[in-house]
Length: 196
Image (cartoon, rainbow, N blue to C red; front, side, top):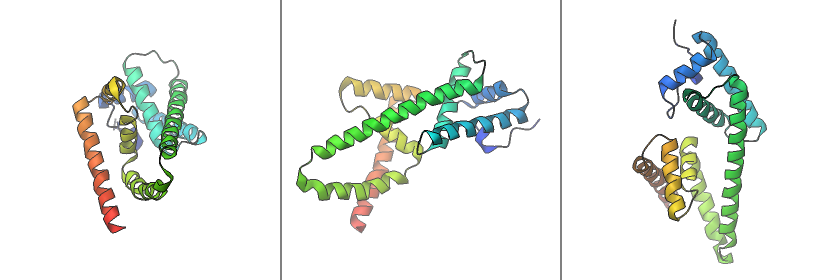
């Protein structure tokens, strides 16, 4: 029997391909049926996230399935995969909502604490930095946002350790990846500043 050809059934970067293959087998022992069930599940989850107003419902559906794959692979008993994934999706939507609230709150505090003369500077930051940030892949944007969530002290170190663990990498590798992304942003801002 051939592998499923639907591109969404390919394992994503942060999930072990063997675990993903087991997940597909869990959906159905027939590889073609597993591919169809996966596609329906993914579309249902993306629809759920669209209804919740998320800006990237496809990525959120991917994350949900990644989490389900990891949990099921860790031998979590799951009688109904669709319901199980919907439960994970609800939690993920809440996480993303809380994260967006935190980001908005931090940004508003930042703006409130700036002197009035800084309005021009804020406009310039927004005009130059935002397009550079948006040129990054969604996954890279999320990584930077997650990495910079906790600002200081032991909590920051612990947060970054947990983030590295969740991404199945080392803190050093994570730091190097973030440094590369910051360099990309910095170069883009320099080019935009010189050009504009």
